[in-house]
Image 1 (tube, rainbow, N blue to C red):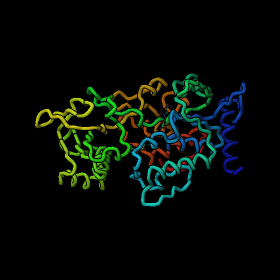
Image 2: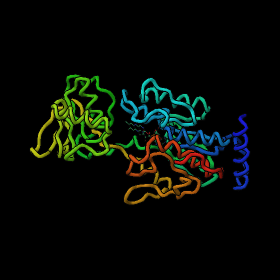
Image 3: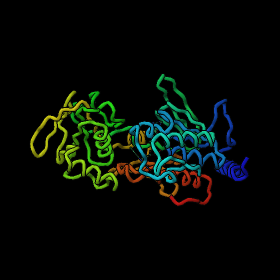
Image 4: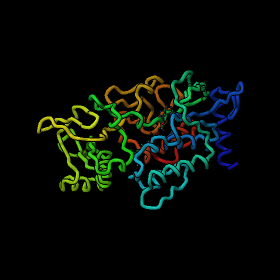
Length: 361
Ligand SMILES: Cc1cc2nc3c(=O)[nH]c(=O)nc-3n(C[C@H](O)[C@H](O)[C@H](O)COP(=O)(O)OP(=O)(O)OC[C@H]3O[C@@H](n4cnc5c(N)ncnc54)[C@H](O)[C@@H]3O)c2cc1C
């Protein structure tokens, strides 16, 4: 074993002992493993936490409701990360990509390889439904799609559940029709078809451009007078020029009234109008599962929904329960992304082992 890992492992056993947790690391109690750390969420952040825990000699389990990096898997099929590869790396492993920035497929391959490299223990397709117990002896209850249930024991918990599962709904009728989606996937089925994209930020602009470039007739509907200020500097001129040229039709100061099976009814400066559309993409953002966080006992700021936590250790108001990644941002989902969330594992494990933090978050 790597001497550094062995040293940390001994250190972690000593810490567990000092905290009165007499089960040694990696022990199985009553034929059931007691993990030192359980990470809820196998996104880049949860994996980074698991790696740091493993490096510190802990026995770590990662549980995810979907596949590995389930959010990234559901991103637009042809997506290219806006981040250069070195800023997406975890566990000090290089992300190699063909062009300047990695594609979704390269990112997914990278994170698969990272898990294999570190031999992380990962349970996929299991949704964490609830947590009992307390610091030192949490019980994490999961359910799988086939109805199977499981319970895992862990001394510490990290919640890294992201934000991509819950879209910000417009709350108009027809939003659940099969031709309305809050997730953009790919353009091919919409060649020569009318499509409406709702929203005015990056994901809406990028979906509109991708659809237009693949032969769809796109109308962009945005409730504000201009596109969002956070649109990436290389996307902005592209979308603005397509709109100026009339290649993408844009309706500003316009809101969706309702979705129908072949149209979107909107109201704007010209009054109400019917936009024919075989498909509508409501790209109105996403938010963390605040109900889940509250169910764990985590207190949220009433104004921002940011969880109460220690900004150094990332421990929440529930002792032994840590938060990592985009869940920390509350409603401000654009404050934390892979680039900075990947360091949360180092913060958490440094606090658990009492080691100095090596990399500034
Ligand atoms: C289209 C798009 C492009 C982006 N591009 C970039 C980029 O270039 N660079 C960058 O830094 N950021 C980018 N981001 C943002 C970035 O992807 C997210 O901030 C990042 O994925 C957050 O990582 P995470 O591990 O915190 O959450 P996620 O990656 O969302 O992982 C959370 C995981 O938790 C699982 N989960 C949720 N609830 C449960 C539960 N109850 N039980 C079990 N599992 C659960 C989910 O299935 C998911 O796999 C992009 C976002 C989008 C939408």
